[in-house]
Image (cartoon, rainbow, N blue to C red; front, side, top):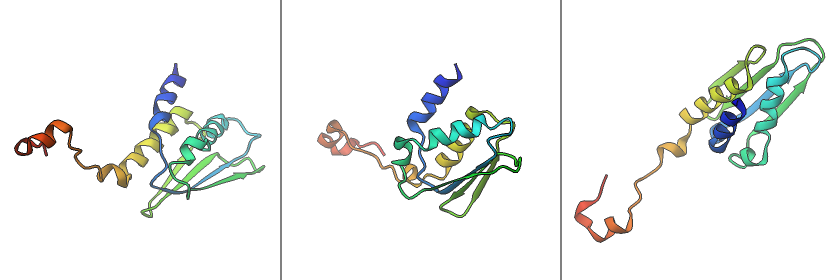
Length: 126
């Protein structure tokens, strides 16, 4: 059931405001499944196509470190997700929330005139 929600979020997920993402985890510890699933989703060709300049770094360590996703945005802000006790869905929702809030293209959307509005110049919606 949760994977259906993940699919819905992934249809509109983008990395436009992201400058770089760094995934750090130890594969031999517990609770790394969610960060590995998020890495798989973010590394898909459809998501990468939304921002070709994003730098994805993967640090695999063997020192029993806590799994962490460090996201740097283009405006200089940072997001640190400590993923030890988070599910894949929670991380994806948080990342989507931040990416949508910082998306520049979302603010640049202008009104598109339809054929009917072009015929009647006095009744345009703004």
